[in-house]
Image (cartoon, rainbow, N blue to C red; front, side, top):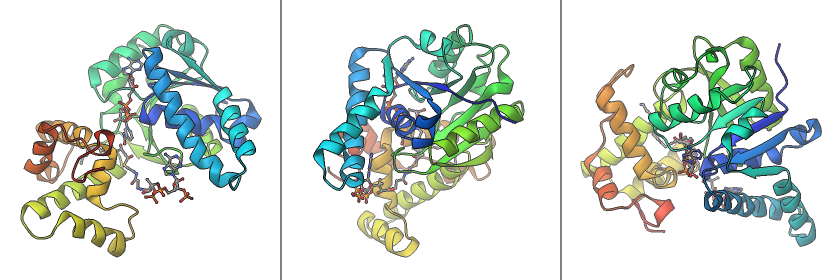
Length: 301
Ligand SMILES: CCCCCCCCCCCCC[C@H](O)CC(=O)SCCNC(=O)CCNC(=O)[C@H](O)C(C)(C)COP(=O)(O)OP(=O)(O)OC[C@H]1O[C@@H](n2cnc3c(N)ncnc32)[C@H](O)[C@@H]1OP(=O)(O)O
Ligand SMILES: NC(=O)c1ccc[n+]([C@@H]2O[C@H](COP(=O)([O-])OP(=O)(O)OC[C@H]3O[C@@H](n4cnc5c(N)ncnc54)[C@H](O)[C@@H]3O)[C@@H](O)[C@H]2O)c1
């Protein structure tokens, strides 16, 4: 049994939030149901950046979808953008939402503060979800008073318009109804939802990050070059990106920050050494080289 989600607010119009809003606004099944989507950020400049991310992504999708027909492609982009409401008022957006998805900075205090504030504004029936890569959902949910049965992780993957997977993270308190509602929305987005427990890294990051870090350590040990490791994993394991390309893609700062947190806490992690942050990762971040997002990481862009 699920309760239908007819209005969604995404808080955080950055790389992920913009992609989530776009994916909802462009989903035929959700358009048919009249699902409304609002994208929220702290200032007009951040909303403009989010709109730019969505517009350029839609342009790539439209070019393929309409086989270069510029008029149809432009109309598709304009129509999809028109289905997104842009706002700087998270409280007002939450007050009119069946689901609030948070995609703000990967910081527990910031996420807890946001949900504490929204808990007083959103209807009791509203489901809260976090797109966090690594923070425990149960810790984020602590900031709400009586919504633990409607608080989940909804972990999308980068780039959201392209990546089909969504991890639906269940705490012990999440109700079956809320889970089913989230699953229906994910299916309506044309994506595939998998269920996982609220454990470090959920499914993908728990496996992906130790692999990425071991690749960095392999190069530090002089066993292979980063270029050959990337080639090997693309041709040998069929990955679309090698580990160094992927680390640059998701952000070296994010990866270092999060793995340091996990290594320090070691909570719930078997084999802590698997996530010990390699020296060369830290050196690049100290030099301000974060990957694709600012032009240089392991590679130059
Ligand atoms: C042990 C405890 C651990 C604790 C936790 C630690 C966490 C550490 C933090 C890590 C960081 C966070 C990670 C996050 O939580 C989870 C993730 O997101 S992991 C990343 C997952 N993503 C991937 O693995 C990406 C793999 N790469 C690809 O799929 C492809 O390379 C690509 C990105 C899709 C790009 O494709 P390419 O062929 O390489 O290049 P193109 O540019 O030609 O694109 C191909 C095709 O796709 C279309 N496209 C690409 N990007 C977009 C976009 N943004 N919008 C729309 N369309 C896009 C493009 O048009 C092309 O289409 P075509 O023209 O070829 O038909
Ligand atoms: N980047 C990835 O590859 C990736 C993949 C999956 C999940 N995630 C997770 O998604 C979340 C967002 O990551 P991102 O890469 O999109 O970050 P980002 O820095 O691109 O975007 C974050 C946005 O949140 C906004 N913001 C910050 N505090 C806010 C607040 N209080 N209210 C409203 N807006 C606020 C910022 O202005 C910014 O626009 C993080 O939790 C991250 O771990 C990231």
